[in-house]
Amino acid sequence: MRAMKLIPELEEKIISGDLNSSSISQAQSFFRQEAKVGKSYSVIEKKEVLEKLENKSSRECIQELIAISPKSVPQEKRRELTPEKTELKVILNKDLISKLDKIKALMSHKNPSMTDQELIEAMAEIVIQKIDPMEKAKRVEIRRQKNNTPQLPSEEVKEVNTNRYIPTALKHAVYKRDKGQCTHKNCNSNKFLEYDHIIPLAMGGGATIQNLRLLCRTHNQRAAIEKFGLQKMQQYLNFETVKFHRD
Image (tube, rainbow, N blue to C red; front, side):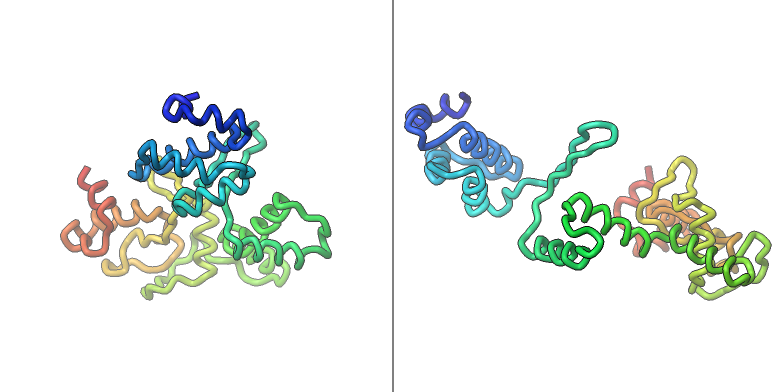
């Protein structure tokens, strides 16, 4: 109705069947999305866009609109349907679709009729097993128990490693101890985690489990500012961290 108020000729197009409510709705969403990025359309330009959507299916309308403005591709979106179910809307290019189909083919011996949801779940499990330090720490501990090897670094470790390099086993132990979260008070972020020397190497600290902790990037940089001063650290820091410290 809003479109018809602006362009009265649309009524005739709807009656004749050249346009339907779905294609008009797609056009309206397209114009709103374009407005968000600073692109406005005159009434004449809107008419031209709608003419390109005449006698087109919903899929063909999307293709026409993307051809007009490639940046108008719908943004990915999550919508919670129930406490257990979330709808995920994401646009994939042809190359990525081919890669996903190839993974399905490679896993077809396990699941010959794999759905996209099952594919995502399988890939998520593989990636977590490969990159999650908590999972790595579990595997190291299982191997230690199986081979009856000495325990990984513990709170009793006293020797100081003054090198910047942190052994993998030590990283696993710190990550497991700190539960994969930033240890700064009231933070608990699990993103952009870094290993921080509580006593910096430059001040005589070393790579021991007692002197290492997990901090998110912002709190790690903030800790460096508190120890070395803003003037010295400013060249290494991003603007947001500097502003956060000043505030």
